[in-house]
Image (cartoon, rainbow, N blue to C red; front, side, top):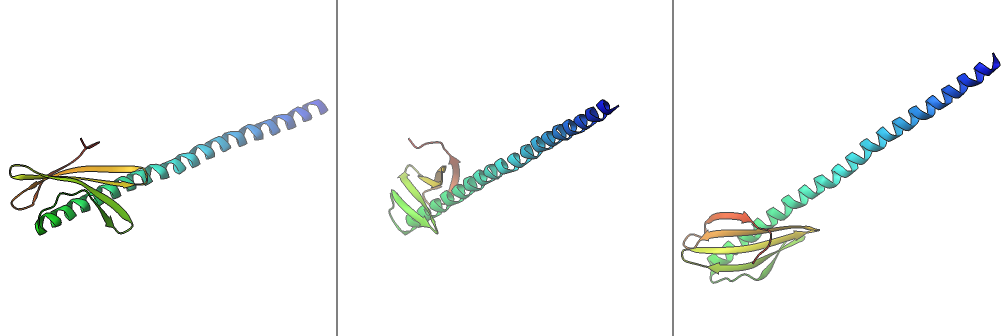
Length: 131
């Protein structure tokens, strides 16, 4: 009889260890997924921020064009961030403005096509690199 008592205690201890291990794995899985999700959210926020910053650079280029001749190649400081008007080229009836914004490791390169008479934006596209 005493032999059965020791086996029941062994089974109880092993069951407790196995259940604890399973709970630990589940807890670590959920905690790491929420930890990694934070970085995914932060990447999206930085991408949105760089896009808005680049659009601010386009608005700056529009203002400078309205004031007179402007060729770009200028850094524009907006608060704590800096974007760059890479180039401003004039074609027949249009002006092409290329801007870039970099925050941390996130970059947005925008190319805007403006109407040369009104300086209204005809289109804005995001491109991977400037040629």
